[in-house]
Image (spheres, rainbow, N blue to C red):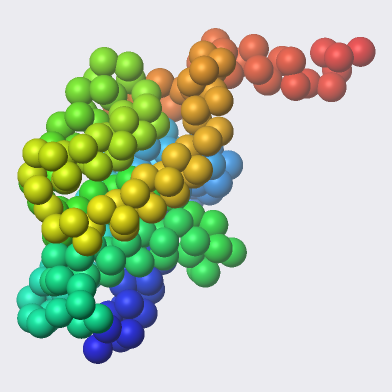
Length: 223
């Protein structure tokens, strides 16, 4: 049963909703903005309505496996409690999202799917982390910064505020490590001041920085 749930979680997580929705609108998400398949880049590509649709679907990918685990797993398989199993299976969905076999093992950065996994297994920690993400993002307008700070803060919330199962902690630390690795380029751009700020609209026109970047990268301008 655990193996079947793990396969289900990975396959569900691997569905690239951002790619599917953008293709339905005739847009190649890989050629827009950061090239990421997550909701933030979908907003840039096809607008906020479809972007938030992708966000909801990506959250659902992490939530459903964890929710099923909470109902199905009643004892302690391998001495692991049900709450931790819920987060483990949700985390498998996160890896499916990050390394989808349908798009050559590429994928998103796992924040929305991770939120879903946490909502199903450690909901109070998830809500506190979401609050931190919204505050940091609204103040900085960097979704990547809000995501990183919220992910790291989730360890504090889980351990010292909510007091989730101690067995959750290693999985949560692993999740944070992967999130930081996936955001390493964003971290560099934030430090350099070149990270794109979030806007609640489709990017129909390039920003001044984007135009300057294109001019610098134009071979004719290098002669």
